[in-house]
Image: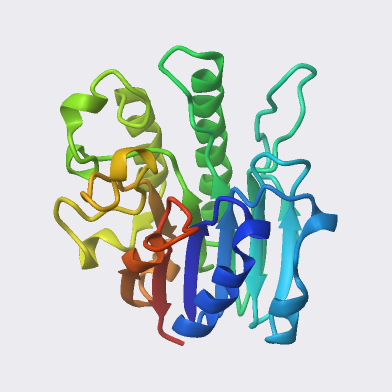
Length: 263
């Protein structure tokens, strides 16, 4: 099975790229983030013609997640237990969706950005990650042998080498000790980063801002991850980051992350 995750940064703008991506790589399950579309706006026709099912969660032009699968799409869940709300009035944001695809429990996650340290959205981000860790810990406790993948845009660079210049980010979100500790808490709960061991080292990025030709100069960040339960991680046979998808006209500012599993 081949599973991929991608912050598409507007599925309506990039549906042709989504269709080309799954065909080019032979992807079985694709999780998407920042789809920026309500469910009734989702352009599903082409994917369905290719044999894929689509489950989407979108409330408005912000956020949005989805799971696209050609190996089954069952037990779709919007949000996870204890997921915090945000806004005035408080409401659930479209940031998390779970589905079972080919026997694997796959989560598409769009972790809040945080905006800047000590912003209300920053505290919301930490609370959101804490609730995710608690829920994910429960999933492992309930069924230790179940393959579970926590995929998506985490909006965290866990290591200094995951940003092009840590000095520029020293006072920014994505690299603060509380954010990194929240990411590590999910790892410590039993979910391993299954891509980094296969693609270690600096300058292995998944995101490049549109600002000042950062992609062309490879001034990026590594913030998109696949964290797998022990049963999932044991099946991983390969991984790649499709850096070329970030290039060209009309690209998302993120690159897809792709993981191969043994049957």
